[in-house]
Length: 293
Image (cartoon, rainbow, N blue to C red; front, side, top):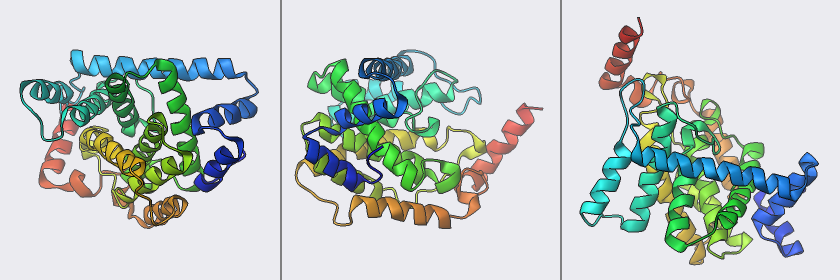
């Protein structure tokens, strides 16, 4: 890749008069040696899997094998249809769709890890809901996924995307940043605005620990996907309005690395701290162990 930082990415796009998604497609082709049509078709197939996961989460039984989670996306959707929500229709739909995909993951369904399974609902939640809301084509959304991929590439190579390495800020935070930056581009924003959206999004999740109850990607992972989708919408709107990340986004990525590296092991996907070690969390873990015997 010809870029390693978000600043380099934006400058490269400006120099070549390219959108982030188109730039990433070009770079991916050079990296893989495959043609653009093949790379685009593969990403398009990934997007169809995301859309199918949303549909499944909204229409089928998503009760997890543990029995701890399931059907919350359907509850949120039903509530939004029955009454005016506090968030409003657009954000409520993004939240419900993100919950849907995350519940499909927890119930052993097929998802796309974006960038991880634990954060798999955020990009589909934002993308699919915004596609419906703004009447965008699958081709446009696929280009948006390349933009999200470029952002994820920078974060992964300068910090981390794994909860076991850097806490939930690395998984959910990165997914929010990827969704927000890509959405800015989908809504006609500049590469510079997209990069600012990344910084705005990441700053809101710094220090978020990874504390899965029972060691399962269910509690609190699923609801964090729902909240994450809403945060991505907010970050995109701020950036499109001209709000800038005063701390450069690349520096925010560096801070995420610093914070995650300093995070105690018990707060990095070990289920030894946080919500996992509350009285209720320990009770659930004990019951799961007994059921498995």
